[in-house]
Length: 303
Image (cartoon, rainbow, N blue to C red; front, side, top):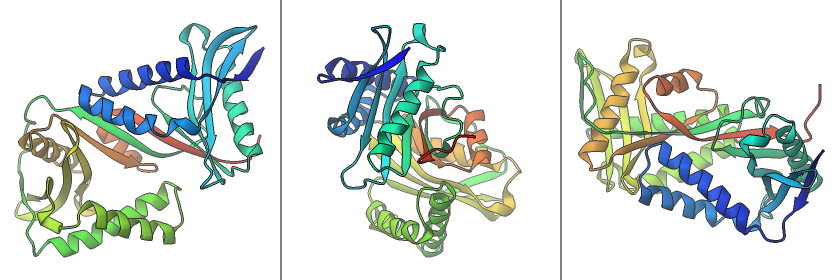
């Protein structure tokens, strides 16, 4: 029988949790400095988590960590759910998931979020995918796509690009089910003001235009040094009328080339839930899921 015991001392869990995070980030190609930066950000937020040991007949088989933040009681979170491999497949995972859902619902949460760092089988299939963090180590210059050229964006092109990107960002957030259109629009304005305050002159930023046969087919927006040795691709976009022609790979190649030119060796980015076409493309060109974000409305209805 699966039981749960809230830990007074979560030191051992913290060590185990960080070890698993480190392995996931390293496997995705992140270097030691980038990995430690990400670990530090996560570590800073775990102090409020409630950690329970998962036991079976008195034997510890794993951990589950949950939190309902004081600043937003409507949203709960499963910070971690892990069952050791030798005890997997015996129903402990399902029991821990259900326990976490009840724990958060009892404290007023109407939504439950989770960040997955390792495969979970079908355990969270009924949770909607809100987004994925993807990454790939770029070891050598990518093969150029025939017929596609890449150049810097001009000042004249920037205003139209900015308006289009902000609108697309709102659509991504809403499609992922993260918030309302009004809140998404405010978030878009705030985020762009912080991320690209000086437009084309923003330091460590590359803005690109992709062309084929003399016509613009897409754009790219990259932030270099987002993490040590890692470039973050905020957007590698092919215009809708040019999709389905293999240009998606050209966009990824342009991002990888810009990453290497800036002295970084990893390209990473977020893909929003609901964009399965992009997810399939990224998988096909070797971008690993580093983290996946899912959510569920509470209380969960049972069929």
